[in-house]
Each structure stands twice: as structure tokens, then as C-alpha cells.
Image (cartoon, rainbow, N blue to C red):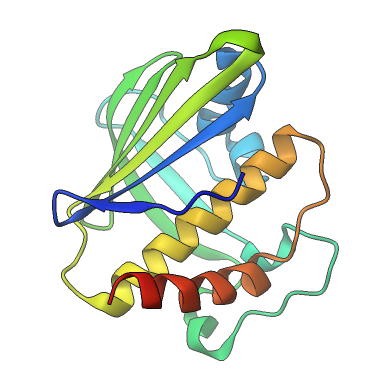
Length: 174
């Protein structure tokens, strides 16, 4: 599934993905630092409101394919660290974090046939096209990796996919 995210409410983006597995399994990929590191960013988490979610990004290492960090993102290369604050935890279907001035909501809903719908909403986006393009492409690429992991598929290089998606989102946001 490779659905594009949408701009909603002027300053929020939203993605929806159908993921295989039980809701508890998908939940673990959001909150367990090792499983989260397989698709987004690892790091210890205090899973309670007000707790820290330490995020350590290693985007070049998701795939076995060599995938060097582009010059544009050299400051965000392997080992980039960030911290989010947990705003809300409702196991197993809702996690809300305050991250870098934005609010990110992960909402899970069980579907029939052993699938889960993930709705990711990133609110309070900066009003800057380049920032928004990078944010859309970043979430899209990370979600593709999550889908691949849950389906036991080979993961494509993060940066290779991300840079192609930046071009597409740049056109879409014009």
C-alpha cells in the first residue's frame, strides 16, 4: 500500500494504512523501542503522559541495500537524536506525542480479517513548503517500511524512496 498523505485543516497531514496482524502486535511497533527502530526510530520510552520518547534515527540502516544519506540531510544522518513528550497513551489504540513543535497522533482500529487501520495525523506543521514536503515524504517512507516489516517483505532503502517521494509531494503541494 503506497497511499499518499493528505493535507487536512490547513496545517496537519494525515496518512491511513491498513496493516496486517492483531492490534496488539501493531501497537508494539509503536511503543517498543526495538520494534519501533525497525521502521521509524528506536530509543527508550517512558510510556506515560509526560514521559519522554527518545528517538534515535538510523535511516540509512533499514535496508541491506547501501543507502547513503543525501547531502541535503547530512545533519540528520545515522544516529540523529530527538526527543518527544508523550501526551496520551491508550493501549492498544491511541498514542499521542509532542514532537519538535508538532503533535503526532497514532490511532489504531481493528478491521475484519485480522487487519488494523493506522491513522497517523501530524498537526501544527510549520507553514513552510520545504518543511512540509520533507515531513510528508518522511512519514510516507517510514510507513512503507512498517508495512514491509509487518508483511515480512524486503525493505527498500529509506533515502532512495524518500527523495523520490519529496519530488512527488513537491508537485502535490503546489
